[in-house]
Length: 294
Image (tube, rainbow, N blue to C red):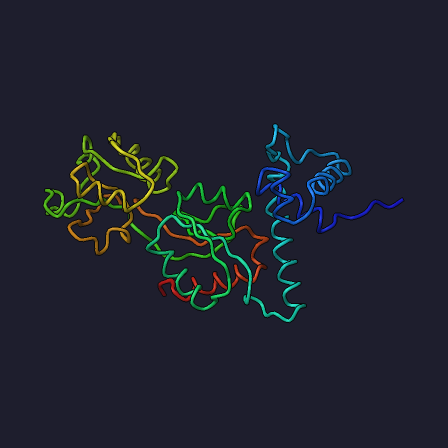
């Protein structure tokens, strides 16, 4: 007898449990009974001989196999929602969701603003975090698109170039470096630096170039936001490390370049290849292209 194909109910049950990490909460999300959710998950696990979740008391922890499959599963459900909307007479982007991540708000916010004005009925969730963390969220299907800082688009992702940037120091206008305007890596040895978290690509790129120059850096503080770095600079804690676009128009602070032509990165808008067909992703890419430097 031919086995039944995967059903949408099964896919929705799996995604709900993965999102809520709990069978009862997943049932509440979908408005069905908890046994119904369990039966859907168990049926898929039995048919394919895989473990989708590890049960730990009331928690359901997704397996490595499910982590690999979730992005495609979520793309399928998004497209089904779009199809149902169109069949009900709703045009694309009259409803829907878009989950956006970004590492540099100065670049991401103008894109978000134009997109939200153009498509006010799309529910947008935006998260700020380090670029490598954003890539991980894309891979797991937790984000649809992300603005990341990198030298190139990661091989497993698709996307578009937004702009090139320099990695610079941010110093008080009264600091001796401000008058010089440019310093060497040797000048940085022993200077108290305030950087982003260790997963930040901006930090990784700076430290890699400093290592090649045999100039050990002293990072006295790691914080997760540019706003926090600015406040620490103003408080006299140390010198900040950021991108040139971040240092523009910050009162009382100026940028100082490091004498290294390779100390640069680009900002890319990236997504999983399979999510390119989602209407909201297409519209966000189009909006970003309009705002990119020519």
